[in-house]
Image 1 (cartoon, rainbow, N blue to C red):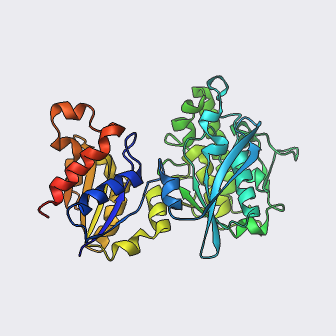
Image 2 (cartoon, helix red, strand yellow):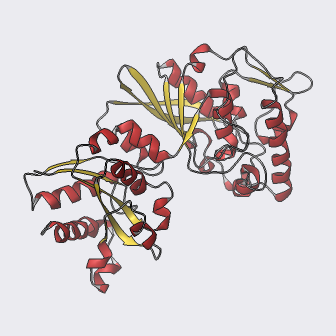
Amino acid sequence: MKEIIIAMDSFKGSMTSLEAGNAIKKAIQNIYPAWNIKVYPVADGGEGTLEALTYQQKVTKRTCMVTGPLGNPIKASYLWYERNLEKTAVIEMAQAAGLPLVPEEKRNPLHTTTYGVGELIQNAIRQGCTRFIIGIGGSATNDAGVGMLQALGYHFYDVSGKEVPFGAKGLEKIVNIRTEDVSENLLKCQFQIACDVKNPLVGVSGCSRIYGPQKGATEKETDKMDSAMEQFANLVEDTAWQDKKRIHPKGNRNTPGAGAAGGIGYAFMMFLNGMLRPGIDIVLDEIGLEEKITQADLVITGEGRLDAQTLMGKTPAGVASLAKKYHKRVLAIAGCFGDDVIQCKQSGLFDDCLAVKDILSEQEQIHAMEKRNATAHLQKLVKQYFVNW
């Protein structure tokens, strides 16, 4: 009897991670009904991540009123679950500070705030959560996480001793940071930040210049924001700034990912002892896939399109890397291949790579991965591969 682990990413627009995995499982069991096949939904921080993190967990969803990116009250939700007597909150930053929450005509990161993200964290702490997994994609902000930190009890004062205003415009005014209202409960929390971008906080590749225009900033405003970020980093990293509640930071302005989501990655590192990690690494650790793989004879993974980007921290590469750690055979299944799929085939991560479109006629390929056809085509591919396995 074979032990098979199936850990597929979603086929966007066609199948969820779980749907793709179960389709493959059914196809194999039609040929080898005695095989022990287990399916686990996985994701790399994007679509399907919440499903993967909370699969077979008793999940509580909480909705609360928070401060939106424009400073107005909005409803935002997060999830939490309990494992080993620890409560873990899963928060998507975009719920409280996402770009879609800001009408196009009002988009300007000089004014948008992450304050609501801090309010979500505070709410979760009140529910007893001590572990946090936070996705930070899709933000409308460029305030270096200062708004979030203000909601968590940090104070950022200007020369007159007043709290600085929301948004990136407040950064250049900060001359003093105070932490007397930061709770001990907050500092005991563990933060894992799903971060797949490598941008530093400042400079030509920093968050202001790269992502500012997408959030509504002009070229002149991006330059101004970058200078303000630099000034803020100088203050934060100044060894003269000491406080009993300050946590030893895990990086600095040049750490890859510090510029993620308008600099909120920097705030998590420097103030909350947060760890910036690829989304796939967080998911795989959280669901304990490594231990399950050790018993497998074959590991099956894949995604909608297999190409060179697959090797850049995406789900199949993460799953395959774990499997190869234990010298397991890995099969990658995709809806289609990109022109540069040869890089995947030569990477040493995958023993075989299959694509649904390769077994279909030209006519069938036109609608191959539409939702109504995707499952049947995927199962056809799997049966052809395993019939003589």
